[in-house]
Image 1 (cartoon, rainbow, N blue to C red):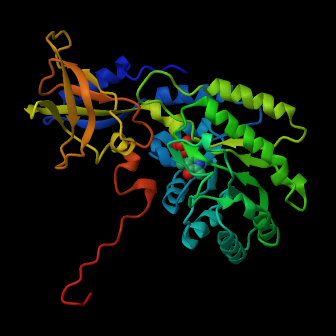
Image 2: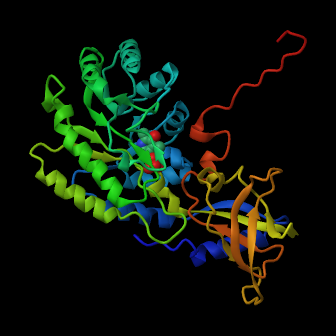
Image 3: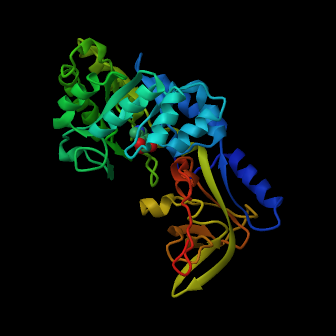
Length: 403
Ligand SMILES: *Cc1c(COP(=O)(O)O)cnc(C)c1O
């Protein structure tokens, strides 16, 4: 699927949405996930992977149990980014390998992860090396780790959301890497297996992602040689970051990236075991956000469709600052009439609760359904206080100076 028409909503999803609305008293809003499409998607991604290259899923893109259970047979493992996500996997029947990454890991999160048996912890700083070694010693285990590197990258490789090649809280700067390797090797309870680079998110351009992989493979022998026993360093986790084009049909050319990687690995005398861990690229396409029009109005020359739901459910368009594609499903499909441009908003009392401006609709009416596709990743999961499954904040009420 290198082309994907965002304005095409499968009939099965359309009928399901209509049924939902027919059976409800109030206008509806909901997320609808097509699990068959998700299986198709992940099988397609796998079918292009070069032999020996692994596919993990970064669950922060969508960690709903049904999504994880559906993906479990088709991915080699899960990438977790918080204690809440570790808890979620531990509390399930999933048996896939898991890795834990992310800056700002608490001791309690690291302890939880290593006692639950995560396959690898991706270490993000020199001090984290020390902390994890102490915790592993306390737990009486040897923990396998990768070092997350923030490498020097050419400016041209950055994306809208860059985590590396510039000052960020992510990973260990390349010039500190020799020191980091030495410290892990000096840590009795840690075992270094390789390196991890998740450099960017939302990279829709193959011709920028491909040089990034090339750069990492060029650096691989250099990084490997930092170890006392380079032969024990076998893993190169190249992260995720393959983007989704929300605004047009042309999508990231995954088959070409895999083909290129296949050739590059074949040239290397001592290739690493490569692992991808995308989030968005796996689940984005399977999800739809459904809204139903509550009210239509004109205000200062602009027409608004006020709909059930809003950015508290689906923050992605606001977060990306884009006009999300909207597919209009009229209550009576044969309806004719004039085409108008409408701004689609939710129920929140803020002018920022906008899904899209200038959406072309033919004679929209109260009760019509609007379907927002490409809502399967970073949709509901980033739109509420449970982002990354972190706990909600404590609330303290102080009165008269006493607690
Ligand atoms: C978020 C994240 C990913 C997935 O990123 P996508 O852009 O969704 O592919 C992969 N690895 C790490 C370490 C992450 O934090």
